[in-house]
Length: 111
Image (cartoon, rainbow, N blue to C red):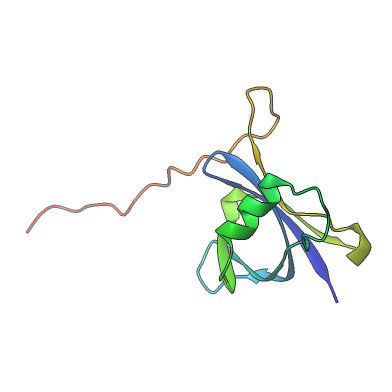
């Protein structure tokens, strides 16, 4: 079964999640991510970032990510996927969010 690693920006943080299904969404400008994969917590060491991610996406069947927030999508081997994580963007990061101030509809004269 295919496994995808999706890295994207969300509220000033970099999210790294794993899923079985990634496709262009029905909503224009969104990527649909389905069947999220979380690492089982069978180890003694618990990563708080991975736990926060698991909590945030608990109960989510499909998530839609704006295309301009996606940094990259990789297809990975099953044995290579690790825990998902959330990381803060520091001041020296080479990741810059894509500008998202899109112009709205033009307003015509009032009638």
